[in-house]
Length: 483
Image 1: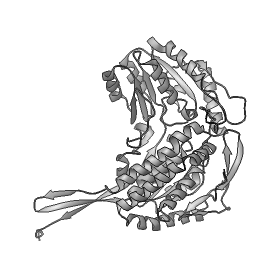
Image 2 (image 1 turned 60 degrees about the horizontal axis):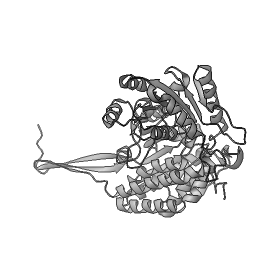
Image 3 (image 1 turned 90 degrees about the vertical axis):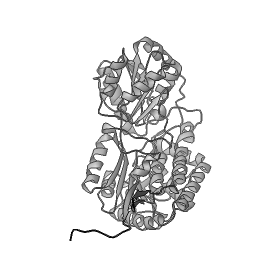
Image 4 (image 1 turned 135 degrees about the vertical axis):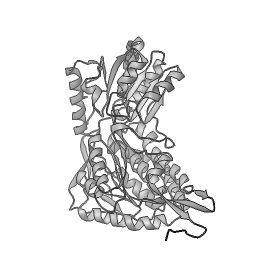
């Protein structure tokens, strides 16, 4: 498979190279090898991308919603047809097992394009009768949108941001994470091949300074970021200084509450999905697992048994179910948290080490007897580290679950559905689950409260974040004025 991208950037419907930009090595996380290189966008590349977006947006917005939707649906079908090669590319980009990428990554990107393509023709205004007079509203695009992606879901995020933007008639300049630069280029290529006009979806590479240049440019009307809270606060402040629209999808330290009447097998499955899928590199993960004391040891024992069956190995092998961290830097960060957990007195019940093999592999790790004030219970780790905390009562666990600056997700496992709804109703989080965890269908809004972000991705809610409403008052009679 060709891994070196055709060129570093995709602008105005074509691949573009500018080797004057700083080189960015593409490193395969499973081996640590350099498998390609791209170059960061120079100021000239940033300008070229924004100018082409400005021109392309006018062409795209002039098309009917149904025409836009038809093209987006065609792109979704093309992504599904190429799911294998896109999934292999995602595995090279991120290190995630092919078993996972073939089922989740490009497919959820296609879902987004298909869903928002289906909505594009339905984006109408309303008629408001006022006696003889009336008002009508028009839903209009914002203009040029900037998407700044994270490294954990490069294909999905490129589509999650691009699909609602395009459905509403906007253009997009997307900057993927410098850690995973390859997948978004393929999304842009497929969109153009499907019929999206030149300039409507552009991809440029770079680090923080390229993102800052995009966010601060007066040609940009909207910024959508997926990233850390610290980065989000900087980007949000910069966008606010220009009165730009924003969507911030940030981090979390989400609670997963397991009551003693829960089905233990399902609860363990939910905890695995909420802590070890993508080697723990998921923003919505339920990394504070509150287990009611009556089933704590049963839960821990069954969890260890099931973790023993994880297949850790070559992520391109379909049998592999647990892959490496995305980078050496991220691996080292997580190793630091593993050490901190032991230093602060948590009981290590599983894992806790780097694996002795090439690449950036860590063992799935479980700490028990974790208290609310421990670092591993307060800070987002973004790796395969589960913190198990004890609790006695419903009231107690709700208060402790909410005692965090974050509010992205929350989950409850219980056989008492009344309690499930009651507890979820009191948890301060945007994306919640009952007897499940980490489901993210495009039909459902996704996003957080508190420091976990603003705005929502996916669902009809996203349309509100990529469009604006114009109201027009129509007077049918004479105008009365005081003089």
